[in-house]
Length: 131
Image 1 (cartoon, helix red, strand yellow):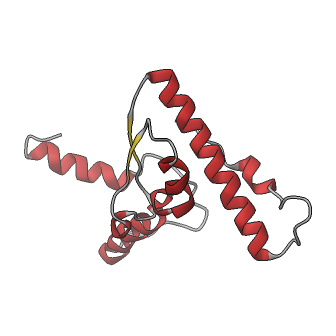
Image 2 (cartoon, rainbow, N blue to C red):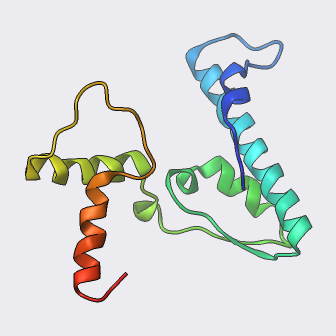
Image 3 (spheres, rainbow, N blue to C red):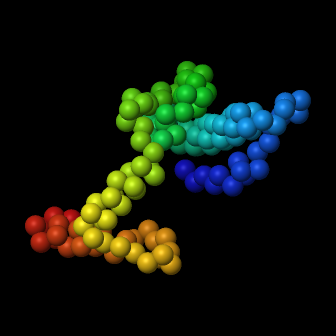
């Protein structure tokens, strides 16, 4: 499912609410959850699926869990909260091992979906006849 979060960044609280940090955060969460839920439900309708599995940090969101639980026709599977890790934490874990190994990148490095360091890992797998 394609999802672009940019519209969420301009989310404001509803009329009549004071624009406190808490209210803005709550409005952002509500908008994000409604957007995710509506797109998920549209995908379910388009595909005919009756079971979905959530993962990553978003699966820990109690509001999203509650919204999806309202749809009795849909079986939503959520992992235990302790397994709903944020991808940022996973990336940091990988980065720790690169740093420990002595790998460094210059400050002007740009983001890339294909990291050259992983190619070494693929080469190692190929030497064992795996890939």
